[in-house]
Length: 489
Image (cartoon, rainbow, N blue to C red; front, side):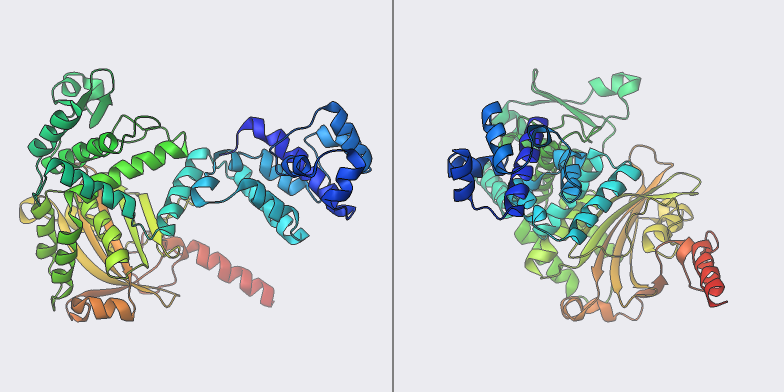
């Protein structure tokens, strides 16, 4: 990530490179005019070196420019969009190195591009400013792109879990909090405290917190064994992979203040999920599920009990295994939240592989389509006697045909009361693009009892005329039609 101290050198180097190319000078010719070594000129243009006063004067004279222009942070109109990009928060926070991108090379390519590309960069900068996008937005978007780049499967993390199991002699398929707690104590001298957080009212909503000084992992006493498994597994991940710096110490990152910290949080979480749900065993489970002629939600929920994991952990693990071992790479994961009145449904987590699938989060404060199984299942859960559900949860699947597009998705969803406040509800959904490959893999797609529904993104934009689940009229769609009508007249 770009540091403030690098910005001046980069801008200076961009100006020198731009002026040299404008005058059609080679490095050899500029070297002869200034007396500076060719290698030194290379380093200047790449932002690695910043020359002293006398050398800047020599460069200014050789490039038919002046000292003040070269040392200022302003630039010509043609270079201005790139300079704005360098000065913006984007390059200061976006983890280019994680994606194997060289910043000097990127800027060099941009400096040589046509004016239309510079106009595009300028537009991006304006969008960032107008919508007040913060570092946290970029970090999370970068992480999602990083997952997509690797098809959400990370061999190094899978291998770390295999190495850990080998080191500890761990062979159990179903792990328990007691087993994981003993591993933390035996191998890392970490103790578990389940009393302290519950004694202080202001800490009641904190699920876990780790303190380095006392080597203590504090756990809320109200956690289920599935939640404890995940948190204990995550701490084992931090310890075994020796992630001591740039890591959060609480359950959730309250402030996403660096990409390295977010990436380490993801790595430890991935380690935990892979530890709890063995890769080879999960492949067999998916094969058995895919071989059934009918969709069976109870059989799917059995996987939660087989591994003693949360619904989110189960679907996240499927999103690791399916792309790598079943070549199912067009998928998305969504998590929704709503309060007891179910007036507003919020998408609190999303991940898309291969493309930005529908549905996806929007910042328009519109009403998500109630035909989505993610929302419909929460509403069904609220209307169902909890004693008639499996551990207070509902599971179902649906073929969702997205109105106005050729795409359909197999959406597998689990709805449940929120862990921290049972009056609230959440749902997690895994969506798989329906194509020939999916039909070959999953026989139950031909189950005549598997529900099929036409869906849209938001009610405000939906053109489904006979929708009985609509929350509000299609005002955006109506406005567009009105504008088209005016143009015709």
